[in-house]
Image 1 (cartoon, rainbow, N blue to C red):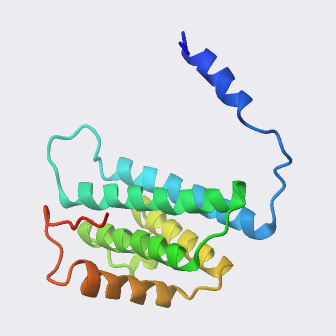
Image 2 (image 1 turned 90 degrees about the vertical axis):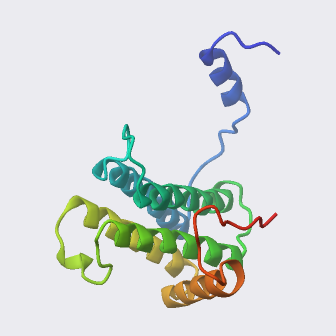
Image 3 (image 1 turned 135 degrees about the vertical axis):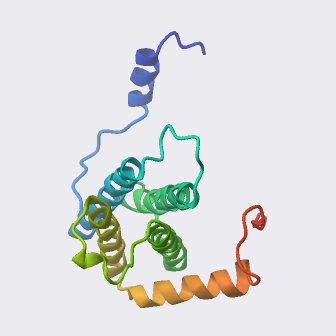
Amino acid sequence: MKLNNWNEYQALALETMRQDDLSLELEEQVLLQACFNITMSVSLLVREFKLIDTHEITPLHFTIMGLVGEAGELIDLIKKMVFHKQDISVPDLIDELGDVHWYLATTAAKAGYDMDAMRAVNDRVSTAMLSIWNALTAISNVYWIPVDDVLKYNIEKLHKERYPDGFEFGGGRDRN
């Protein structure tokens, strides 16, 4: 099949999409709103940290890219549950939530923000980070998963299983 332009592809793509009723349960609406809040807030952080069009690479590039990637994995998991009606494995959800929390915490630290004191700071960066934290908490609450359990599990996973000697650039483990 040869496609001549983007509009032709778009028309074919839309033919593959069913037009079912997309009414959602309240929990699903909460999950979608949380996903959109994460997406908008991460985009704001990229702009605020001026990470685009710079030749200087900083630790923030690493933490923000990790935040984008892990948030994408979490959002994809939720998309599959909401729109594809697939069951979510709670351990997989905890794993993804923990990874996003880790990148959020390390991004805050590398940007000079204290997660506990952030509520008192009134700027766009702290507001975006708190929005991500609140969205992650909302997702946890839908599944009755205490946030403390997510955080503890993630640190144990990273310290004991993945990086027992600590993380270093270029030292990632092949988990395939």
